[in-house]
Length: 146
Image 1 (cartoon, rainbow, N blue to C red):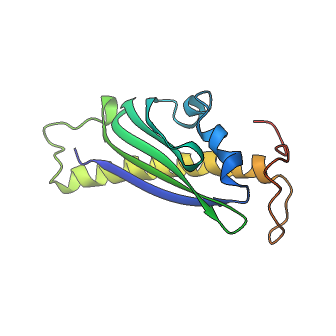
Image 2 (spheres, rainbow, N blue to C red; image 1 turned 135 degrees about the horizontal axis):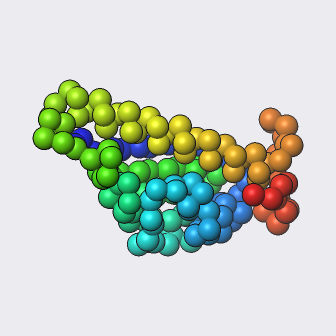
């Protein structure tokens, strides 16, 4: 089967110092990726985390936190090969159009799932901040609980 590669960027108007402990919290990971088991292979501190993953996919995932303007660009990368029900069959090889369509369907589903989670995190951390207004200071409590 064709591999799945997903790249996403989302701006959140809070400092990387606010986001880093949330990204590093293992309690969040099953909420974001319930069918994956993650193992940290690189803790980058306020710059994010890199994981190896097994479960519905085998590969790696990364969240890189990049300071930008008055907040952070959250870069998400997912690279993996599907397993289980999404696994390739003899008729579903990487170099076939059917294989690439299937990989793209998996990528699209994971992209939409990730966007829902990262936008929920954005809502949680930015609270009622109107667009164009400054980000809350790094030591301000989150607007709502998760």
